[in-house]
View: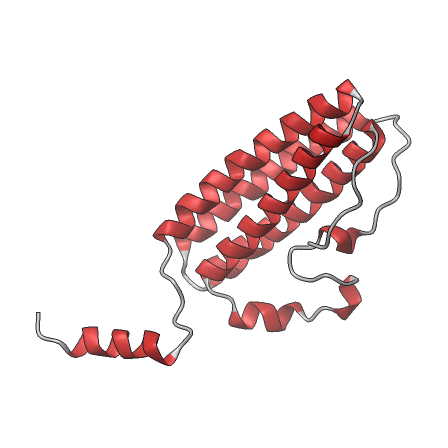
Length: 176
């Protein structure tokens, strides 16, 4: 997710939240499908649960923002997988290399950036409604961060270096 524009008013807060929730729901669903296809049921289950929460939250925010003139935002500003417009991204390449650990790290980074954006709005805004909504949104992101951090602690770290493979081979060949 690229750095989003700082939030200045309630309409901007809702617009940012809606963009963040849309991306989170879509990516969580996409990650769940990918992980299920690779028989990673625990991580897939977490992403299914996150996708459900994100969709529910998106619907609630859409209801609450109904009638507000929302500014147009660039969807790629909130993308989990790139920092450019979607037509420049090769998702197949990302998914070809991704492990459950990677998916969790990508999601965790996105949730932390969203939480930081809301915290920035709380500290920078003079509008009590923006502060209230941003605090609420930051709190929800913190809950998701906790779930992802817990899952990340349990997920096997991918093998990325020769030393990683050496440890694996040595452990497999040593007598128990």
